[in-house]
Length: 484
Image (cartoon, rainbow, N blue to C red; front, side):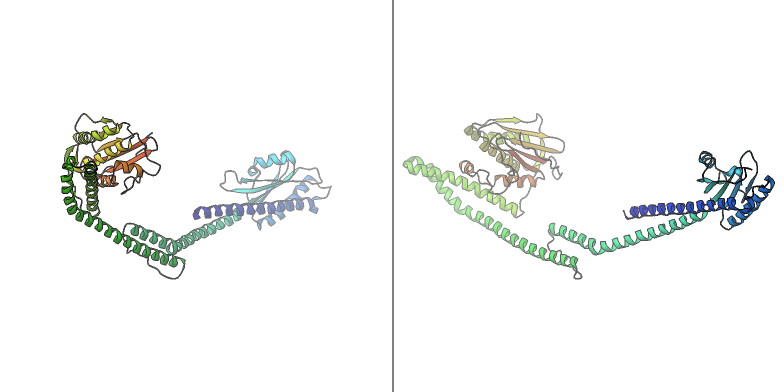
């Protein structure tokens, strides 16, 4: 941009200087031509009315020699020509009547007043000159003369060339100076900002010990100091949160493990009471049934907590094998059929005719599908639930779609959050733990796949599980459109 601006400035400068030189040259040439005409018309040797033509020609020759001597010091050439039918011409510097531009002759013929043109002299020359033509009026009617003067533009061209060279060199130096200034600015300002951006990226990647090197006491140094203070505060808070999270995970893991022993004892006693409930009075029998049901929910919650704690501790292992997913989907739907019957829901199943084999851990994928299908039934309001299995060479896609209450805007990204419920009252009637979808998400991620959700109020929800057919091969994350 600087080079473009400098080039434009040089172009305007050269145009202005060139136009000024030509205008000055034109004024000088026109003045010189007028002076030459006055010299010829006012010479005493040509004013007598008794001059014969030979005497007039002789006098004109003397006057022309005086003009030629004056022109020799000014580097311009003269031509004094009479009317075409009179014959005779005086010239200096090899300038002849054949060199007079036709355009200038036409102008003189049209108006018979001084005129000038820019033309190459002699014809065919590579450089133009300023040619001025003026009519010369003598008292004797012995001929109609015209004075032509050729003013070379060599000096003006040399001046313009000098200005061009000077401006070009100055422009190059100016651009170099701007480049130097830009480099200094980049070193003083842009480079520290770039270092701050790189340090921020490293901080974002988890390298919390990264800091900026602060030098000096200017605004950039103050920015670096503020950045380091912010990084210290972030590091302190992140470590505090990590410690709290670690304590929380340890607490959940320890409590989950410690509860298994007393739960086993309570379960044994509850089984005895449940088996003998027919011998109890009505209230005691109902209490035994409620105790059995709540113990089932408690065991499910405890199992989910143990599974989550394994993921938090990084102890979850994946044992994959080539598995046909069509029977897996059928088993999950068969197990969910009693629940669907209680809700008045039917399944619309779309499975390919050929086996769909993928490298998966069957237990985990079956658990994911069970969570998705059960959620669809419980939130589908008795409307059909669509289950679709599709596959290509790289991936397997299972889609579970219900037509129930759907999801509010912004809830699609929250359904996989632990203990989150979109409808607390519904959660109390269906008895979910709030961990099923969170565990399902971790199971799918462990396989290197994607679990996505989308929904719209009153139009239902759709969940899509995408798994690679070959273990370790990533699959792209494509957006999931909400149901319409």
